[in-house]
Image (tube, rainbow, N blue to C red; front, side, top):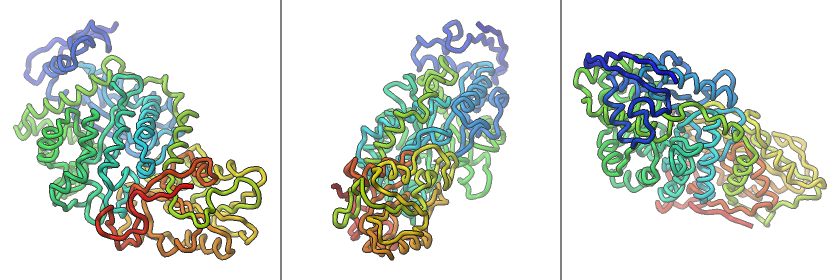
Length: 606
Ligand code: GLC
């Protein structure tokens, strides 16, 4: 039992004796007594917090520029890993050790308020090497299976817990309306009802209780209208009526709030020219008031820097964002400046203390509900779930259900498993990095065999019986007319956020077209498996293809694609996005009067 009497000079100048107990014991102060209601504990703790304590709780910094000693000195409330920001040892132990080091820093401060660690576990715990990489949301939307998605949330929560973290910046509940947007694949679909149905993932992540085994805090993001920008420009402007904003983009947030989502992340985008990060009406009046959201609102990555259109941020921007209703500010790098601005803004009266207290109350409530005051350190008992057989089996089932069969001339699919020769080609046939897409081990993801798993080619080889010869050449060279079928696995290489915006062509590139021409020249039937984060402009080529399967971004378990190609699973996937006839039709969505190549909800089976 570590009992130390600490004298804390509160900002009021009053000497306050703080005699904390060890974390999780009732021997300490009321806020450390788990038998008391959370509201009581929060109320007691708030009375003991200095302005510096409160400012610190509202500050989220990036691991790369933060030490455990910083957490102690500045009372930092949360640390994050940006995409790909991992400890030197990218293992469950390496992550958990890092988490615990930061937590010890937090508990070394007088009030011993635990910190929270946020990470983008958006399709599995994708920053952690060896984790199960689930299909990205666009594929999960194609499954039309909310129960499956809840189970994926549960599995993800276990793999997040096993690495020590307690908060994921997921799910993205954006409603992607223009497929040119680089984040289309992070959306469950273009239809608000479909995205709303998939908020089951929140329940999977958070469990029935936030302090339940392996429960992690979820984040509904990005509030509000990020998928509706003009031209599909990432971080652009959503120029629609409030009625349209409410009808199309708000329902999934309402559903997530009803499911008790613990945090909401604000969008970089603007609504009719006004940055969301400064929109008090939408954040405070609508989200917190009308929807009754009682969790906390977190900014996006340095989102406050964008408020005045100038580089960097100012005290005025800090005040605007906090007064608009942001409770925690993701200030990845120059957080010391932020701390000074926030403190000064309160001391100058730009931000009322009531707003600071409300933000702290929201943040602390989630920390108490997560059980962090009782169990502040990493729960390493879930480390074995990371990349487990059970999770990979679940992911493979999700891959199966996400495949959308768009063309099947002559019933060439399902392919017979034995006999003859099958040729496999394409840039994404033997490339787990391509089939996983962005937010995989790094922010942008990368081509190559970046993570453990099964490539689509390996799945094909395993599914085809010993009586079948499977030949692979990435560019299709070597094929001749002796093959009974050619499978071309191609499409997009990984990207994330604005780097994936496609304001121009949405067609296959020259490399893919050359591969397809080489295959088609032999007269062998060509089955195209499209690995992409969105519908592509393929109408001009479709006539030359015998079959077409939209595989989306299936993740580490590529065998699920072969399960469909060879009939171990008859395709059930349905388009989550309307499929354009040409890029000139973008945006094109269900019931907008335009004639698509394939309509929303389309999908064949055997
Ligand atoms: C990024 C994304 C957001 C992510 C955050 C932290 O810029 O917009 O989705 O959660 O930063 O990585």
